[in-house]
Amino acid sequence: MSSSTSNVPGQREDFYARIDAYNAAPLWEVLDDLVPAQPRGRCIAALWRYAQLRPFLLESGALISAREAQRRVLVLENPGCRGEARITSSLYAGLQLLLPGEVAPSHRHSQSALRFVLEGSGAFTAVDGERATMHPGDMILTPSWTWHDHGSEVDEPVIWLDGLDIPLVQFLDCGFCEQLGEDAQSLTRPEGDAYARYGSNLLPVNYQARGLHSPVFSYPYARSREVLETLSRTDAIDPHHGVCVKYINPTTGASVLPTISCDIRLLPGGLHTRSYRATDARVFAVVEGHGRTRIGEQSFEWGPRDIFVVPSWVPHRHEADSDAVLFSYSDKVVQEKLGLWREHCGTD
Ligand code: GTQ
Image (tube, rainbow, N blue to C red; front, side):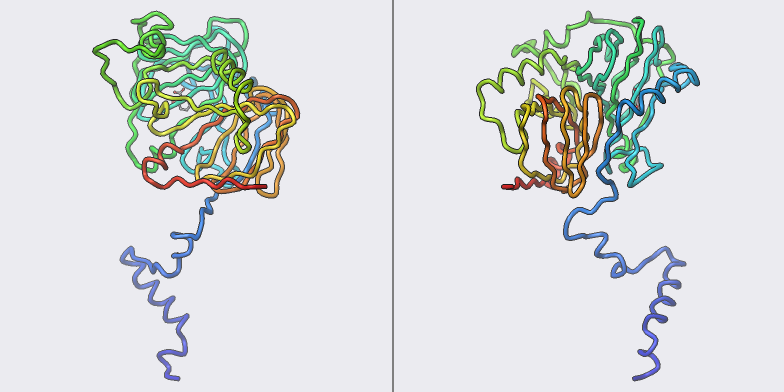
């Protein structure tokens, strides 16, 4: 063996060090990580118990005002990627608190957001000149680049889950943000206006879409719950999803936001869903009921207002002890648009 081949590892290290100086690196050392046989992201399954987080959220209310914080939020960080303000690789989640009399001043940004109300009634989010009053289980959108502010004139704390595409926008390096410079934007339309115009199976004849998001931005729980109830009385229960409906843009049938898909499902008491996996990691918020979700080898017990996350491509199944309603969101719409989304419905 010649001396030139006997110390191959050493020669390679030397070679790597020399090309490193030119900002170049050998693909063959990292190829399996870059192009894995199947998804193996760093995000892991996790659950945030509302009863454990709520006292901290209220404590934060004594430390900083909503105005000073701009948004007083505890970020739910995936334990597999702490410090990165993400609950999945592409999506963000946080618990936002608004105390009586507070305002979260008006701003707009490239990032799209949804709010899923967990506790308290009567606070509002204003979007593009119209207010939406919040009640538990309501889903409210603040689409990309729409002015939005939050306010509360009620006498109880109001807490909601924020779901945003912050990590995705960060990854693409395409985010902008502007402050309006005022607490609240001026209201130009009465509450319910968008729903009447765009959510009634009717459209103003000259309707022209503004952006890729739904023109309806408030999806009250009373309506979604009634739909679930109606379907559960007539439809066969889907063995993987229970009774599950997606939130859509009524003018196109597409997802409500171009970057986030949302759905809500009823799992009748006693239902054990079959094993399911998909490439979109999914954030769940429990609205009603108790049960558990088995994710890979782990089991997560949940009750109302708990939040949990299922990573990409990990088989999971839900077990409802009583009638349960789960809201969820993911980047499915992005993966579908890119032709990347996959699912597998297990038979067990
Ligand atoms: O309410 O606009 O949780 O901009 C994170 C960023 C909420 C908001 C968050 C935001 C907001």
